[in-house]
Length: 164
Ligand SMILES: Nc1ncnc2c1ncn2[C@@H]1O[C@H](COP(=O)(O)OP(=O)(O)OP(=O)(O)O)[C@@H](O)[C@H]1O
Ligand SMILES: [Mg+2]
Image (cartoon, rainbow, N blue to C red):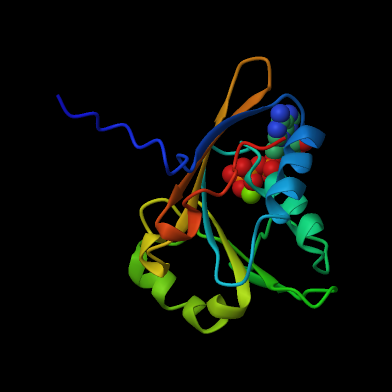
């Protein structure tokens, strides 16, 4: 019998509960500390799930210039680093139709020196990078959120996504 369980490489997945908005922000701050230039995060979840709240925390963790807001007219915004680290490129793909429109944003030019976060990026932004952190947020009736983190590609192998 073959044991297919890989015990040498920790799975780069985690499921975290955020009971409140500030908890979600704190999760973002912790994630921000794990991130580095070239990272791509794809955020999914329904309207008001907490994608921007998480991104605000990540911006704090990275030490970039804020405020990180929910863009109404702007699709992509660059938040420069205040600490000599990667910039944050925050994209809201809600109004974008397809991957070709994501392509038109030329995110690949800022990608190597930045952390790129795409809200509503599921299904349209995967082509940005073979390595990416997929963040799926579910909203429960008590307003808590379940955040499912999945690291795709070698970049995320062994990264402690579930560390407290
Ligand atoms: N447990 C929680 N986690 C995150 N946000 C929460 C939580 N409980 C309440 N909230 C509130 O829900 C709202 C989430 O809004 P936010 O803009 O972050 O969502 P979003 O997913 O970016 O929405 P959109 O789809 O419009 O971009 C905020 O007002 C936040 O304070
Ligand atoms: Mg948002």
